[in-house]
Every structure is written in C-alpha cells, then in structure tokens.
Image (tube, rainbow, N blue to C red; front, side, top):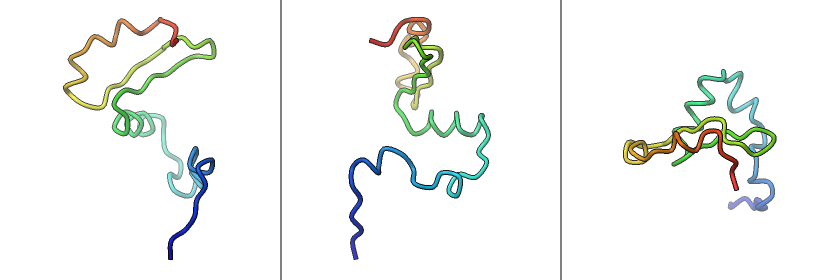
Length: 72
C-alpha cells in the first residue's frame, strides 16, 4: 500500500529526534556535507560564513572566495 505524503511535509523530517537522536555538531556537519554538492552556512543577514563541498571534483573550485560575501 502506497502512502500519500504532501510536498509541504517533505520540507522537514517528521521525527528528527527519533531518527537522528542526539546527533552532535560534527556529525551533523559531516552529514550535511555528504548529502549536498555544495552546502552553505549563511548568517541572519545572508552572508556566507562557511562552505562544504560534497565531492573531490567540486573541491578543486575556488569556493573559499565566497566566504564573507552575501548570498544573492
């Protein structure tokens, strides 16, 4: 039997504490970096504060110059 899930409910996990437990910050950072091609950490003003890339090919690009720039 196929379960129907609306698009809005897919924007976040339904039970992250049950599924992820008490995931530490290092583990969370590694998980995000592994799951994305490029992961950006933005501050409240939209300035890029950190970047992680998900593969060696992208790591060759100069994304470090993005740090400190506004995401627009």
